[in-house]
Length: 237
Image (cartoon, rainbow, N blue to C red; front, side, top):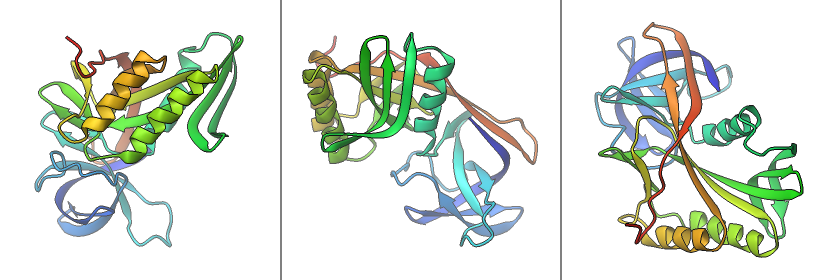
């Protein structure tokens, strides 16, 4: 996916989870943060950030914060991007051979899943998670407790019991990373649920992303899913 026109700024502070104050051409500007997660290890004062100008003249903020530099690594922070990335990637990479149906936001029973696919004789539900937390080459999710995330995993297990294929697809919004782990330090119940789901037929996938922006004042930012990343679950050797 592509953000067509972006500019660079400097992160100053985050007064709440929706707003960041950034320095743009010497002026302090409130910017919408397209990620309500903590991002404390990324959004630190002085960090270089990438901003997307708003096309809506009625909006309260003129920019959205969509990426941040962590050293030389550019991390996409847009929490809406992973679903779009997986949607594009499934079709481009022919991940499901014989794909005939791909839908977004499909309700099954009392659950709503990010994606639904039909291929050959198979039917599959896919739940997508975006990951922006990295420590020493390891990508970690979640960066805050997520009962909603545990609920999604249990719902995927229920789909397997009903005869569907089920996938949890973790989009690591940066590269390079060496492996993916559930963040047991922050929410051990998520890791336990992920392990149980894996043992009961849910496919756990993690892929990294290229996040590329030319070094020019105004330029596009491109984000694409790239390579599979090994998944390390609790009690794995």
